[in-house]
Length: 432
Ligand code: NAD
Image 1 (cartoon, rainbow, N blue to C red):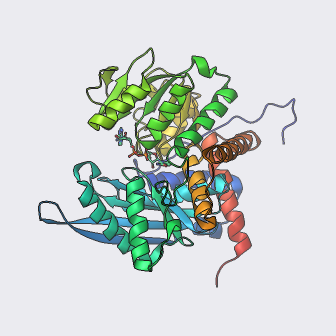
Image 2: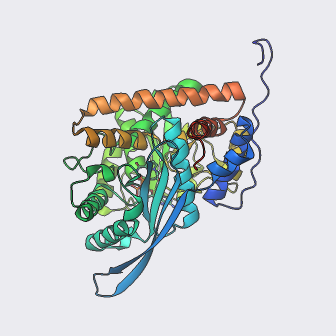
């Protein structure tokens, strides 16, 4: 350890050479950096890198026009050392097995970072939810649930919402599973509606966790939040919630976007008005409360805090140099490619990585699962208070690791998560 009079070794970020924009390869590249720091042996590295189970299912559906379509669906369980697998289900036209594997692995490290007793999983169905009717989405959900039924369960693998899935989709999964199992199994999914075993505060949990990250980050970087400007990419569950919470806290949101483009107002957007417009029109396009901009323009805007809350691979080696934010807080999973990490470090941008920043969702999912098992439900203020405490502790542990290991926040977060899973794996031993 360096004495107080000695300057610590410089923080260096290896330039990672993952193949272009492949989230699973990105995860592995960052894993290798953390594993080397942790001095993990080759056997442990092989175990922790390899997803335990990958299931692909075909989902044949009768569409509303009478024709038949077959959709592809996946459920990947990356690692169950810490407990039942946990992870969302996304409906997206771009989803593939690499994306689902990456998301499942990130869930493993994320659960470990916030110390919830879950392993990591993820699911996806390749479809365009924006073009499907509600009855079509219901049929897809029920058939997909039936397809993955044998590997999920309250003690095995517990799905939750992700992109383009919501409380309604979770209710259909719970109902389908319960019909097959001849009972009422609320613990099969989290993110359910209130009254069906859902938890108070789950819908806002990821955004609320991000708010704690914002507060911790500005404290660390000595930025006055009241004077800060914020840009949010994505205005769904995560982006919409963090924008609203910050707006309510008196913080200026300069721009926000959805998949169709962005909306900017340098003086600060009226976020409740913007979200009400989006709710009514199902898009931000044409909203009169700001000027239009593209997602690319939004990402390179001058601001104190940038919160990407949309999709993966938004901040890449191609645009990272253009970013002007002082702090990036990753609400989305994988918004930054591995190749962009070193570029952001070189610009001294403080990045709070996804596996720490957006962990609030899985923390309250854990609370929901606990409440379902107890049959007793908590007040929203208790949920929020417990969430804040866990997120604050996780941030501080990761930040402390940056000092002791002289690494950036992302590597420190990977080290915290991977180190804990490795420890538990050693304790459990290898079966048989
Ligand atoms: P959502 O479907 O509610 O919202 C997604 C938003 O991103 C929408 O506004 C959509 O228009 C926009 N978007 C999608 N693709 C885009 C693109 N290519 N460019 C710009 N905007 C785009 O989804 P969500 O639940 O808010 O999830 C957003 C991200 O947060 C995902 O990466 C998800 O994995 C991650 N996440 C979600 C949760 C959760 O609890 N929902 C928890 C942790 C992480």
